[in-house]
Image (cartoon, rainbow, N blue to C red; front, side, top):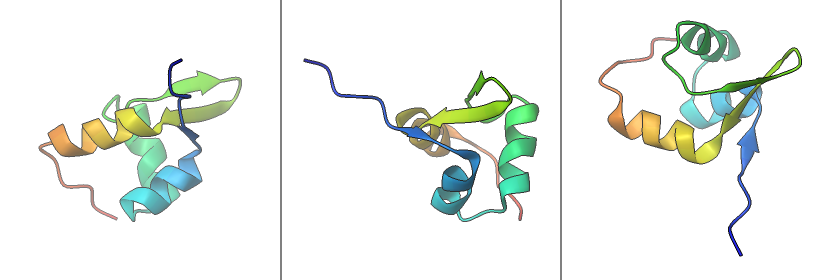
Length: 62
């Protein structure tokens, strides 16, 4: 049996990365932060966000 995918909201990603929610939306809009759109909402897979963070060669400014 596979592990369930942990999905995060933009607010939860912001808290995880210690940045403002607006920064999360902007990074997603620029295509920098992996996400999916579910209706009007953006959702983020926790594992993808953590992989992105480890591989990112950018500094996210608040």
